[in-house]
Amino acid sequence: MKIDHLEVINLRYEYPPAQRFAYAGGTCTGRLSSLILVHTDTGAVGIGSAYSHPGLVALIVKQQLEPLLRGRDPREVEFLWDRMYAVTRWYGRKGAAMSAIGGLDVAFWDLRGKALGKPVWSLLGGTRRNCPAYASALLWKPDVKLLAEEAAGYLAKGFRRMKMRLGRSEEYDTEAVRAVRRAIGNDNDLMADASMKYHVTLARRVGKFLAEQRAFWFEEPFQPEDIDSYAALRGTVGVRLAAGENEFGVQGFRELIRAKAVDIVQPDASRCGGISEVWKTAKLAADAGLSFAPHTWSDAVAVIANAHIVAAMPNGLTVEMDQTGNPMIDDLLVEPLRVKDGMLHLNERPGLGIELNDTVVKRLRTADPLAIPDGFYSDMVFGAEGLGPSAPYKEMP
Image 1 (cartoon, rainbow, N blue to C red):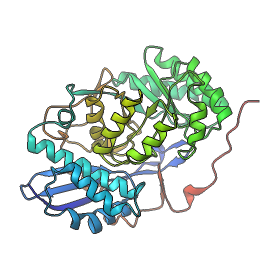
Image 2 (cartoon, helix red, strand yellow; image 1 turned 180 degrees about the vertical axis):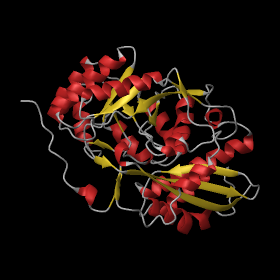
Image 3 (tube, helix red, strand yellow; image 1 turned 180 degrees about the horizontal axis):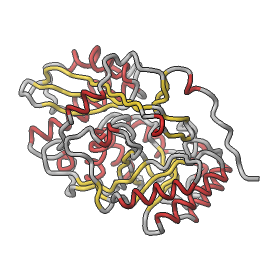
Image 4 (cartoon, helix red, strand yellow; image 1 turned 90 degrees about the horizontal axis):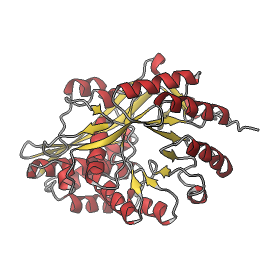
């Protein structure tokens, strides 16, 4: 089996105005992601995805990595990862280059599994074909009663865990958490994402409140560069501290772990370097007595890739599933993602065990990845409108 050519398919979805959501980062108007397909001379196709600037992903994959990879055996996953990293190290190491490498790495693992007739979770040493999953939504609402209704809806859909966004004001944050906790009861898990809006004193105060509310974890109270604040907070509030969606490569997570900054690391195969790097990070976390729970906020390919690793690793907690009406999550696969009794069920088909819904891919495909319409795409801003200063956080007296 040899690599014949690579294909990058950039996807874009624009939310209808009534479906747009607000959180600490701004008001989200749309979503972006990039599928990466590895075509081989046998006709087998590996599927991966990268969550980064679509134009940069396309340029790196097609202009630099494709000539390097053409004619190579995609089953040489580890060798190819090292080769891709070596040629992008000077401008890469973090950001778009690592995400592009990761998308290819996921596709290589898919092809390795297909060639061996085994699912990725089995190749990684796993024995279970399911993975705990949580509903990721509960963005800002004008009335916290609406959050309670939304949370109850996720229970009805089969979730037993869910994550909400804080970072609006201390009064709103505490009222919102209480409302959702009442709605889901104490038998279901609630995660809180502070969206990098706190300082240490505030985070300690809110963290103790979250512990009283039996929060499952406390996510990203600080900017990802502020490791010292994470280290100062960890272990002082009675709730586990989680971070890592903005980190790249094993080297980045090694620093988080070495600094004793978090209890739960959150690598993402579509962001931090692929299945290979998430797996290595998970093992690094296990050696330090920590858990991992992958971030996923892009597409269903990334959800599945991350889920295979969680299913394979004893310290894997759960996988994230966007519930904001993103068709890249809900409709991208022929067999949609389904959760029952809190578990995302995988299958025993080779590789990732997935097939893309071609109709949806064609509908969402963007012709020119360097010509993205202005908008706030949750984590990526195009145009100046999304760059205005956020409202100041109001603390309680």
